[in-house]
Image (cartoon, rainbow, N blue to C red; front, side):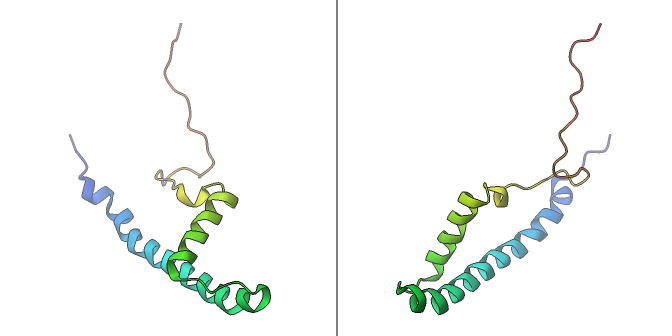
Length: 92
């Protein structure tokens, strides 16, 4: 009986984690840069910090993205929108 080791199966996911963190940090910094270079001049609002831009992006993702940014398809073999097959149950 072959029992897969969790570290081997999760190895790919743990390699993606630092990349995901970098993407989120870069996105927040880009949002902060764009906000601070545009919004204060156009609308007369204050400049924002990194953490304010991070929270605004998170809030916008939850409100307008339906939380889709927080969902991850761990089943690498199936398309993301495929419904799982129902198996088993009562049979005659």
